Length: 351
Image 1 (cartoon, rainbow, N blue to C red):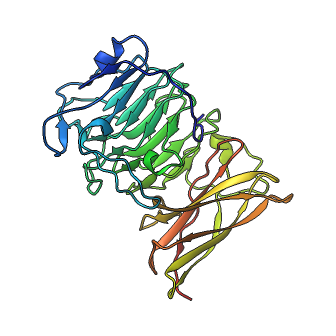
Image 2: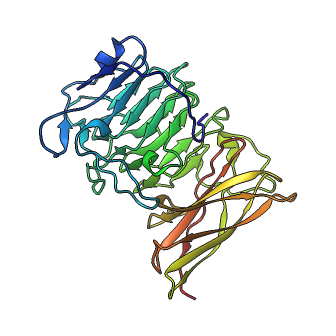
Image 3: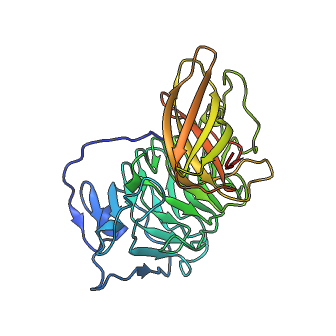
């Protein structure tokens, strides 16, 4: 299960400066891996010649401690500046960028690319409450070029519960692009590639995927049950990965040329009398053959409550897209945490 925005007070941790995961593992209590490399503001690339040690004790790995680094402050897009890059080109076969087998650990502010296996792998029973936020996974340090990890950007499996990928705040958003699969939640190891994010096996529910940039994958951005886009169902009673949460239906995306605002309007049919967070995205073109795409840039979010028949209309407003571009949306059930697949893309027109 992935919670929406967990907050948990923590005691001041001991610090492992210039840290390594080995130093954090050897430090009693919660460790912090900070960076202070060199005397310039250039990107510092760490190219391990073998797999990095697995994180087995609670630790925060904070790339934003490197001089010149800066968290994203934009509501739309990103102005994050990342200065620590983990390059897996020489790390060897089946190497992960970072492997976590501990609870309540945080990975933030890192560029993680070109590893033979996963960028970040969170594995095993008891590895609960981990957070992955504010990273570029599968791109260069500028976030503009494909440097994908061969298998998965972020992999969460084998009873790794209550993890958070991204979040509702601008600084928490990850850029996950160019990998074999963007994010994968699974009960055990999976060998499917091509989607942005896969959640499958029936016990994988309550996974909230919020505000991330998911694009440039070969297939759809989010795939529940690893079966493409099966379509919505009345009242949303079915079960499976994320309870097969229905996606929104976008009816129109109309650009008001004088004001520059685009109104994205649609309706969600799902569980009656429940509240949903609708997130609208600039879609990644071209769309999958199904017509459903991915979400490259978060445009707007809005809360809506369904009526007794399970319906709720919504509208997102944004100034980012242009005529001819396409948009999509997801729905997240606020009470259960389940996020849907992306909706079918809708082209922006100027009536």
